[in-house]
Length: 212
Ligand SMILES: Nc1nc2c(ncn2[C@@H]2O[C@H](COP(=O)(O)OP(=O)(O)OP(=O)(O)O)[C@@H](O)[C@H]2O)c(=O)[nH]1
Ligand SMILES: [Zn+2]
Image (cartoon, rainbow, N blue to C red; front, side):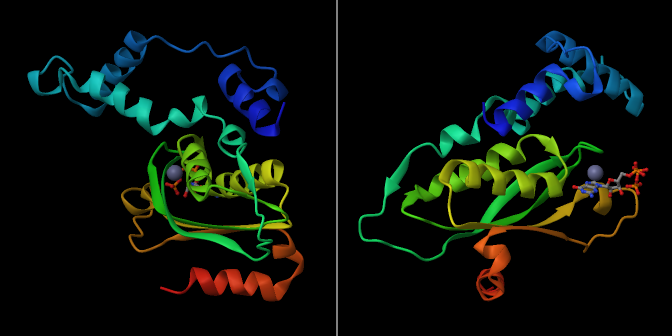
């Protein structure tokens, strides 16, 4: 079982290391009842006509925002191609949309991911890298964890010479509430293999990130 599969299983059934009881997935009706509770907690009346269908919409929206729990990044990366021409340089995707939610407030954080790897002899379909970013984004976690998980998934599956990941995102828990710092973005990076040991290569990655 891959580390990601183990982590996903832990997420679904409870943290084995904390010795918690397994979490049973609530029914759709239970989830909608929870939304009605939050509407009342906000000060509104869940029986008011304008919000009658809101629990259904919120539960559907959660189904989209958090569908990363039912997806497997390793599966997305399992189809690789031998590069017969011997391509041996950086492969990098810039400006991958990140739409995620922080695990502390369940508030959106929005930004861009930049992901590069140095192939050995196999390459992966480039859309699969963007899919891996999307899978991790559609789970609750911190930006740091997400950055690391993307790098780990690519390392585990492709066994490349190196991986670099940079995420630049604005957290709505910081911009729309709390400290209300509208223009702050958070940058996280993870460098593995040659991107960690070869400073010139790391700088090339950062130069590509900053190309505008
Ligand atoms: N390191 C990290 N922190 C995050 C991330 N998303 C949200 N946070 C922070 O999580 C922290 C939670 O702090 P708490 O003091 O427990 O919560 P809080 O009282 O709501 O904090 P404030 O946001 O400062 O009002 C806050 O500082 C958030 O800015 C993330 O992806 N990574
Ligand atoms: Zn937050």
